Length: 197
Image (cartoon, rainbow, N blue to C red; front, side):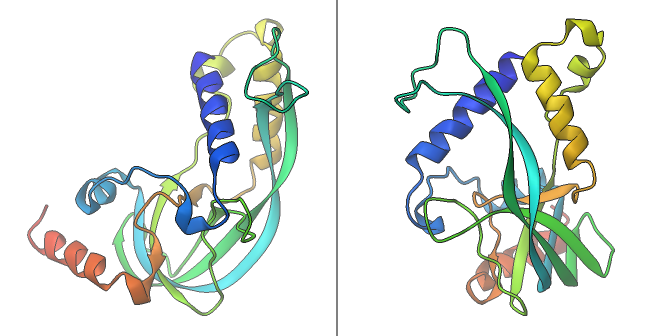
């Protein structure tokens, strides 16, 4: 439960301090090799479908003034938000998939304060995707339901709402990018794959 509170606070901080463009979001990048090692799926693919869908998330209510100061008794709420479902035609797989197409989730980028990746149809990208995790942890789900907190109940409801969404997502804080700008990274990935590292 403490982990979920920390994740909620971290998410709030990102939302409050995110800038007007996706490129200005604050990230601490790993090396290409470390990002490749820790990512579940890496491939080159062309966007063939890009649509807005809905997903559920759970967050803590802020004080009415909108500050980051939390209320004495935190209130949790489930909201329905927009997210992108992006399908790629895979032209070269480096890790994690042998499929000809691959669908993943991406933050909804509007050009405003959101930190999403703006995928454009018919353009080709280097993709670093990770497996999404349920909001309700395995340990929490094994507890008797009569012992669940409101946060746990809402997380279970959100997980139920989200269960048919693609199980992979992409982060703006990875080496995902338009292939035009990622030639050096693609070459490096091919080189360390040849060397078996």
